[in-house]
Length: 176
Ligand SMILES: Cc1cc2nc3c(=O)[nH]c(=O)nc-3n(C[C@H](O)[C@H](O)[C@H](O)COP(=O)(O)O)c2cc1C
Image (cartoon, rainbow, N blue to C red; front, top):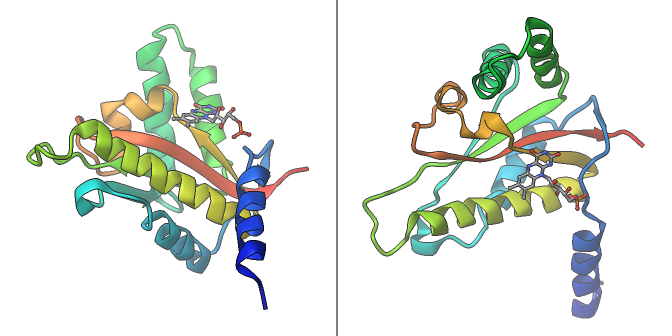
């Protein structure tokens, strides 16, 4: 039987051992594991219980339109971005074993929970997810960049232009 002290040490070890994966390969988490990760994420503290997080799995058929939108977001930022550079951007998205976008669907009508607190709740949910993924043995990379601030990318994942993308999470097997 684990002692309370033992459990606490495991938690501290889990936190201390989390780090961004250096590289990712297949396989990513299974559908069942993704579900567990989302449940862990949803235990985050959340002022007003608004559950502002929206986790969107960008796998299968959804991946190509996401890859296009991410590449377009880069070209919006750097107009001289070449077709070859666009293709490299798409390829980074295509080759990811699993992508989860963590969005914040902002409720502007709840005065007691300012927008920043809603975004913070999504950040807390993402950290829960990172720790849970680490516990399942998967690596994660948290990315943002121009794609996270692009209305085009937000639209592709079903977010409004004034919602936020807090994280573009790449999950997979850690490459040593
Ligand atoms: C809000 C946020 C945005 C981030 N965006 C990026 C990013 O665009 N590219 C990237 O390589 N890392 C990004 N990171 C990951 C951090 O760079 C990473 O956690 C940091 O380098 C520390 O490394 P560690 O996770 O191994 O401790 C982001 C982290 C946060 C919290």
